[in-house]
Length: 211
Image (tube, rainbow, N blue to C red; front, side, top):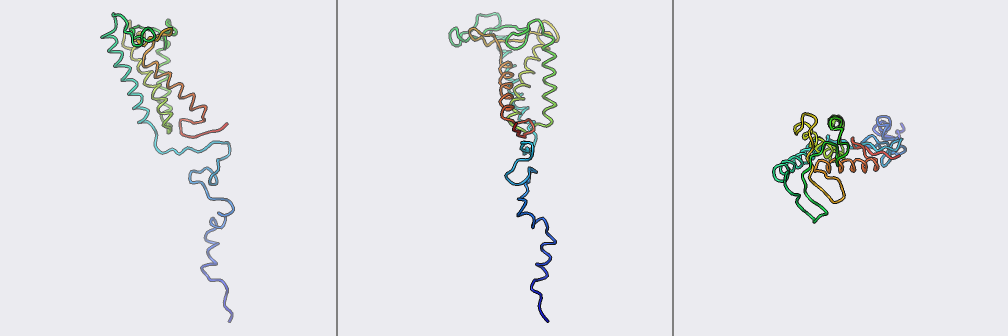
């Protein structure tokens, strides 16, 4: 009797593993779900490597920004208010205690309550974004915004002349520019960082999109 040319084990290999047979033609699957290896899914958006949410980073940056703003304002009120300005770099930069009823850099002095509400809304929005925050740069940017907003909101709630109408303590006085504080600086730096991240196509969830 004539022997069969192929072994039983070899005959079963292709029927038991159809995916292995098609791997050579379709390419290896991306473990992140982004299509074939080395490719980008349709729509030009690279899937995010999520890992863990960046809540800790956001909280640390916000806490540092808030603490620095609060400490400097306490020192300004105790040591500088009612005294002559301190010249840091001649007349180009001085520390001068100023009570500001408006927004950052003295804008809108007649809209204290409005800016108080805006600061509260910004904080709520940041908290909502934090639920899907997987990007460290976005955590830093939002942390700066949160710390700055909390710093100025604290002044508006607890300082004179009254609840939600408090005047913010400013003290950094460059020549030919508005007087501001560290909370204002944190808000501006956070805003600039958000603009840069948006231009680079990086979203808070860590995904990268290309228009």
